Length: 252
Image (cartoon, rainbow, N blue to C red; front, side):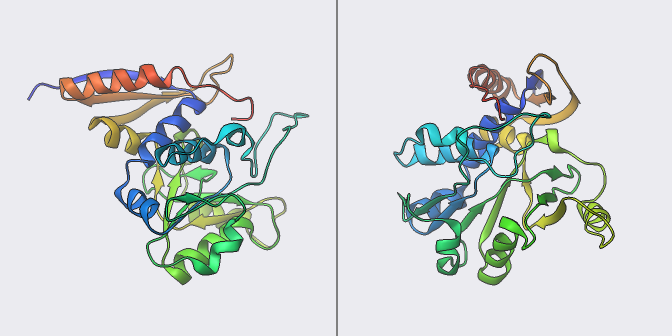
């Protein structure tokens, strides 16, 4: 069978949009959007995920997309304006704008979906780490309660710009040490959903991370070598053209 290839370069904003489109193709999510609970935790990647998910059921996220901030990392002396520590709660296909993750935590049942981003991903294992600033464990604590206590399904969209070499458990042991200071880290239940999974789900092509970096707004770019049948590579090129039009919020 003939195989072709191409190289695509994805800025963090483009990766977030790509991952969001891929997440929307998951059968488990489509099922719970019809009947069940879906929670999309606040976060910059999840702003894109929320936009795509809500659009799939007929809602427009509007300006909330760029204000879904939680634990955002900024350049020195920078500030985020109009940030909202907002979660998206969808019940039986309806966006419940007045509800938060905490409000529905005890209503979640087996198979309901929680979408939570991360700060560290090990590409070899798919393990995801989340930095924690809150002394009571923050959102990670609630996600663990839902995953292990109520058998919720966790989807973890995270771009490979956040890749780490060490096992997430080793990093946790390091920074969670009682003698350490600063941020802590929790291990997110479930496996990472990255650009590689998204490319496969959306185009049937296989992607390999081959490089990264950039300047003038392209910092954090990931470079992928993509391989597949001729029709798959054409689908990749069409998708890439669509991603190149993505807006790039300053906080992403």
